[in-house]
Image 1 (tube, rainbow, N blue to C red):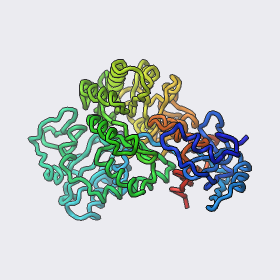
Image 2: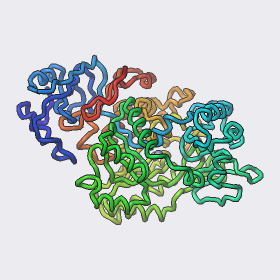
Image 3: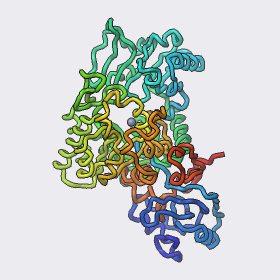
Image 4: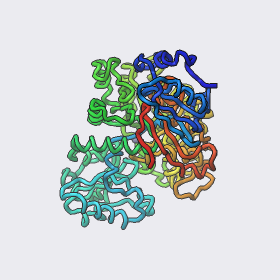
Length: 569
Ligand SMILES: [Zn+2]
């Protein structure tokens, strides 16, 4: 049977009624079908109607889900000035548009046009790519981004001497792919006034050689010695980065992102929204320690009548940090690293500061999302969330732990008991899985990216990529969560295979899981009448192919608000 929110005859009324519970009801005018997709294998994500063949859209909303015949009938019955765009999917797979719950959108966009070091496999390649890129930009231009991975050439950390000779006139500031350490060349250190006399920074590390000289590598908070003094990108560069980012994620079937960013970046997004340029829906988080400014901004109603934006650009979330990353040995663990017995990582903020900020934000009714990687970081953060919940009483606050990478069994249960959302990045599991056991040993690895354990505990999980840190490609993310095959293919049966999940579990985390994590589950995340018409079409039914082939599937078309934002040629 065709599923309508209300009977067919009152279809034109169905949209406003169904949307009335949401934040932005569509216009109450009649709703002719503007787009119909038929002959698809639809995974709706809606437990009341898990599968279908066809979808009808009016304007930016889904109005009907049913069989191809039913939806075709609806199109011909629709007396419209504007003809319906009828799309025959040819049996392809149709899912709710992917929601990437953790991106650094503008950084990602900028990197699309910068030096590419992610797959530099040797020191020579690393140097050669920087040298080649330097030739393409005028002297004096900063070379940033890169996303190198020293594990690919055996683990030796890069030094400024590697690249000084090929970049005498370009300040270089290229980061490891996790963003938790970066290499400055000598020109960059000179330009920012960082010398051998530089004082240690709490929550960070200045890497020195045996003689005490700077190697050019800075970790976590120490990265600000260079980053804070770099010339900021121009408005034009930021606009271009945003456009590139939106184009790129649309190619991956992503229709919404949760952007972990800054106030300056929020301005870039607001400018694009005002100009009608947004093609991706964005939930924009700002730094946790600026919670008061966000509370004031919401109150001032700068962003719409409710103060929190609309279906394209929403605010109301804050993003903070407990610790660093595993790959940089800056994640905070209860026990020392297996390969560095003196070291158990560190916090980049004190628990007291975190409590003060989180409590302030929570009191102001804002959502809090905090980065925690190591088991000690996660436990400490859950303690703080628990304390704030007890202090401020029960409400639908949806605290989020970003990454939730290494957990104890007790903490898995605390996610459920405290209704906390783990916002996780499955691609990291098959990336870090190549070397993580050298760093933490096999025992702690058992609850690393513990997707299965969290779902079994009835926790609502949101998936994302952490782009620029990893590619913003949900299909690869689903492949990662389902197979856990490390990128080097050395673990064909999966790294920590007991934490594998099904394709549908992973789809859910990339759709409804993300919608729930931004309080938008009444607007998106499933294919059902009344929902925003955000859809991704994929050439293969991910449920029906061998798991190892999932990553070969291609997004062929992406719709946001009923509009085609990407179409594969
Ligand atoms: Zn991140």
